[in-house]
Amino acid sequence: MSERLLELVGVSKTYEADASLWARLMGAGGAVRAVSEVDLTVTRGETLGLVGESGCGKSTLARLILKLEEVTGGDVIFDGRNVTGLGPQHLAWFRSRVQIVFQDPQSSLNRSYRVETILASALRLHRGLKRRSDLREAAADLLRLVGLDPAFLDRYPHELSGGQRQRVGIARALSVEPDLLVLDEPVSALDVSIQAQIVNLLHDLQRRLGLTYVFISHDLNVVRYLADRVAVMYFGRIVETGPVETIYRRPRHPYTRVLLSAVALPDPEHELPTETALTGEVPSPLAPPSGCAFHPRCPLAQERCRRERPELREVGGVAVACHLVES
Ligand code: SF4
Image (tube, rainbow, N blue to C red; front, side, top):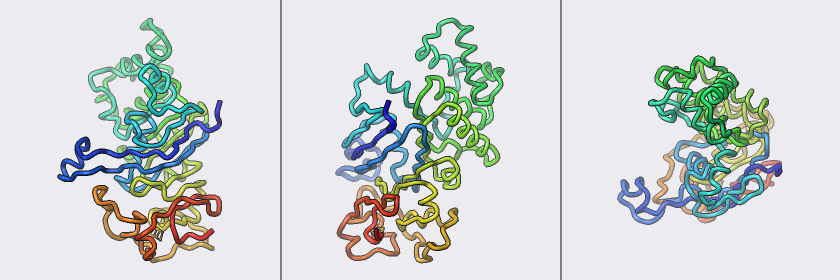
């Protein structure tokens, strides 16, 4: 059993223009690169937070991890096994180890089925249960696990509140007893008052079941609460990654500084410079900037930044991709 549960090695995803609705809508040819050469490791039992603006590639990366889409470059290694290009005969094995909880439980649960049916279909496949009474009991156990009364088995998704639906979504993901949960903005569609309950549930489940999480969120406070390490994405690349407290106390990449300036409590010895206000728009993937993709918006950009793309390198316990960050 590998301590490294998930490894992404040079993972890229490029959409050809004729296959990309977005590119077709833009009337453009060529290719759109959504994710570029991402290297990440997730250790068993930890939470990796994945943050960045909308459209930075977080959700595409989630789909690549889950093999809902295939990478166009690099490898996905799960529990020591290269699952890139895994054939259909092995996909069931992979799906029993890696599951996703979606942002919107309203659309991710089949509204035509009662909760019992939603949970029983996965239980039947994964646990080999056949008798209705066994399936119902196992489904009831799942509901108890996520803090719902088994009476909810007889309800349809539209009869549940948003928070209850998300609990069912989590129960469904847990029905196959996975090792890794990819949580794609799991609380952002919920009322603020409910968000904390779901975050606490996720925290509790991780502790009780030894789960590993990839937690995608634009809520940086929640990421700080749940994550052990964080990876910051910009324009399809990781620009900074490391232990969450190290980065929140001293963000080094100019983009990370801007993201965190509203929420972090920086180390007083490393106050955020005021010139890191973010300006401009996220560049179009159809016309990627030269050099550092952040240079059109970076207040610290220099001539070199327009020419050379910075690579991730280790600095003070984190990895940063910026020409100006000193060792
Ligand atoms: Fe800004 Fe240059 Fe660093 Fe890119 S490499 S983040 S443009 S200073």
